[in-house]
Image (cartoon, rainbow, N blue to C red; front, side, top):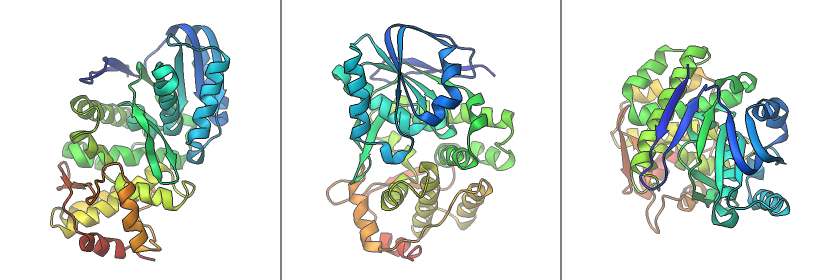
Amino acid sequence: MNVEIVFSPKKSQDYTIFIDSDFQIRLDGRVAIVTNPKVAGLHLQALLSHLVADEIFIITLPDGEAYKNQQSIDLIHENLFNHRFNRKSTLIALGGGVIGDMCGYAAATYQRGIDFIQIPTTLLAQVDASVGGKTGINNRFGKNLIGAFHQPKAVYIQTAFLETLPSREFAAGVAEIIKMAVMFDRDFFEWLQCHDLHEDEHLRYAIKRSVEIKAEVVAQDEKEQGVRAVLNYGHTFGHVIENETGYSQYLHGEAVAIGMVMANMLAQSLADMRQEEADAILKLLQRYDLPTSYEIDSVEQFYQAFFHDKKASDHAIAFILPKGIGAYQIRQDISKDQLLSVLREMEA
């Protein structure tokens, strides 16, 4: 399957998302590939065989969400300054969502913006993180609270990279696929119920459909002023879980899976989701061994952490909730008592 999806954000230049294309990247000027040791050992040589540029440098960052911080951005920038990169230079993100987010943010802020290309090597990055131009880093207050919208010049998705992906990383990507289906496409959700994504043909279709959905959404709302926020289904709860556990216990997609279950519980309490629909989502998540429960130590502390979410205002939290499967709602009128009631169901 050789698929090219043209992404047309309203406020940025169009670019192409290539899926399993026999690609060759030719770039003028200096190029830096940003990656981590594990990904470099698996895939760097393959990328270099497809890349032609005047000068190529490798910037290797430590592996893991714990290093998605300002220190890593400083390391990238220092390398760029030391090698005299300019506005005609290009960064290439080779890795998962963490590498893609940091490389994109470094590109957005170096000399007020240079080009970058996404080459995602995890399923989560292929179906979600690499598309749409969100870049950023974490800090002690929460996830992705510092960043910029900066669209890549192109995205190259190679499903062959997934052959080396650990099972947990694969499942974390499936969570994001399920997220897309629950929010936007009931037919796709029903297809997922009947097809095993461990089979190559089914996986390629799921990647293609997920990228199509995300491209359609972001093209309407590049800067997340409206419908794009719906892509954060499960994330408002999931980000708190990640922050509470120091970004070390759960992969991002695993925390999102738990967050989806919690969002469904809230939707059920509002009579906006039937029990059988919530059960169907739970069953699909569990089929891929994703975690679906979490013990909350302090309900009040968990509640207060919501206000660090980027969608929160001074006195209200925006919750992305399903309205059945295949439909969504954005609610800012959920009372504290309603939220605490749901959180107490997961209290330790």
